[in-house]
Length: 263
Image 1 (cartoon, rainbow, N blue to C red):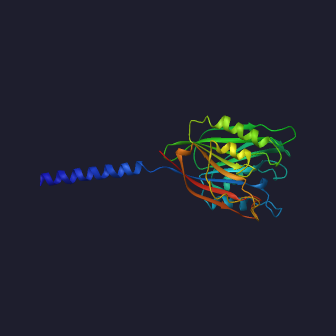
Image 2 (image 1 turned 180 degrees about the vertical axis):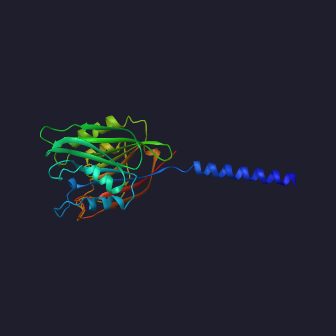
């Protein structure tokens, strides 16, 4: 009987150890959304942040990159849009100003469910007379204890401008030095075959590499200009990718990806 009890006890210990190893091997998964929110307006000309929040909430994201974000401007009724959307979605907000505008600021926003370890707002190059641009980055800690970086940006919109090329080169110069796995999301205002996006893709992997579903305009999408990219390629795996078009909430479709951080 004593031997039987020992065997049962050892079997139980081994079983618990195997189960623990199995749990440890599960890779963390991050739900990412990027959304150009048309400075809080809708395509119907009104101002309804609940419509924008509803688009965000339907995917239950962990991290959100927001573009065309107003901070206490007159046109946005003096609202801090990042904070308002953070309150509505129960996520922590951060605003990064690209320029002064209409009595307040205008730039990027990030919403996160994860604690922010560090953040920085990096100005991007632009030609005289063109809008200043920025890349807003947060370093966050996942529930697994892993650390990643998340960048939201909005590149120059004029089709003939060379600013986008200068801006993606600056993004590569600065953020490829990150010591943590990194996700880059935003309205890049260029199509997958363009020179600017090709420069990015030398180092960043597109979460939608093959289909290139269009993201703009939201009422009849014709061009893919909104992206979720990641680096380095061997540390991420795409689980899901989806384009979400709400023709009222914004003139852009939102882009959603689920990424697994490989160990």
